[in-house]
Length: 140
Ligand SMILES: [Zn+2]
Image 1 (tube, helix red, strand yellow):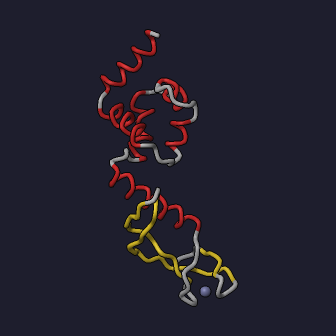
Image 2: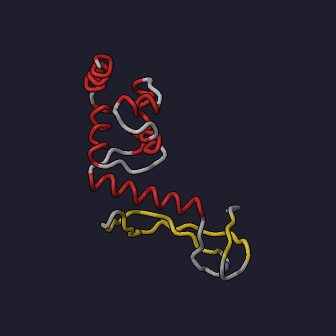
Image 3: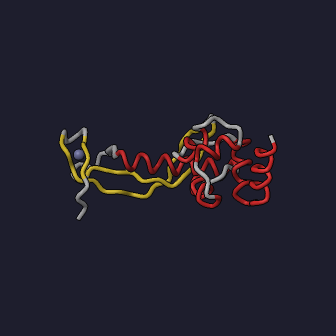
C-alpha cells in the first residue's frame, strides 16, 4: 500500500497517488530535452498531482539529460572529487581560483558551465593534473 499522500486540486483533499514512468520533455537553457520522468496521479480521480519530491527527481533527470548531451560532468562525479583528494569544498574552489562557494553550489546540483565542467572532469580523471594545480598554488 502506498501511504504517501499529496494534495489533489480536484478532490480538494490530501489523497494517495500512484506513480507512472513516462517520457517527458523539458527546456533548459533554450534547448529541449527528452528524459524519463515520473508522473503522479491522484488515486481517486486520476488528475495529475504535484509531489515536491517527484518534481525534484524529474528536474534531476532533466539535468542529467542536459549533462549527457552537453558533455557536462555528472553530479555523482562532482561529489566524489572532495573525497577522492581529501580536500574540502571551499579549499578546492579556491585552489581553482573560483568563487569560494562555487564548488559548493555544483555539489548542490547547480549546473557548471562547460568550461568549469571540463576542469572538474580533468581533475576527476587525472590525479597528476590535480597535483600540478596544488604545486602551482604553492609556487605563487
Ligand atoms: Zn483527486
